[in-house]
Image 1 (cartoon, rainbow, N blue to C red):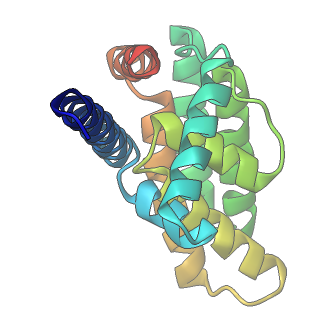
Image 2 (image 1 turned 180 degrees about the horizontal axis):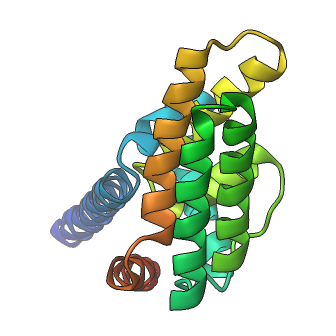
Length: 194
């Protein structure tokens, strides 16, 4: 083997090492971005699908799917109406907790539809919601689980109260201030450009 051959092998090895290093750096940045964006939803998704790579692919698919939606802040009149409806539902909880939880779930669905989220099955709605609302999506899942247990006759009044607390956090975040909603939409748009 000539010195020229050894030099070519060394250059080829250096290129391969540089490419592998770049891939590792890119993967770490992507993982960090997803962890930051999705918060606890990142770990929940890994646990649900069983592998980090699959979970990250799922989260990227969610981002792409939600980016195609036309998510918009509520008009001030709609925002005021939803907040008034929420106040009425909370008041009804004292006398009719079961009906109030069902109405809270319907209200959340109405807000999501008004904002531009398509209304499919629960898991799809929760997955879509996790892109822009990764913290409160856990409230949505918890409230929904209580509502499902209640349908089977397994939820206590205290659990229904907890469901209302979870729905409250979700309503606050979804209806929220226009500035907070605009910031979430802009953040998602910037994240999709990276």
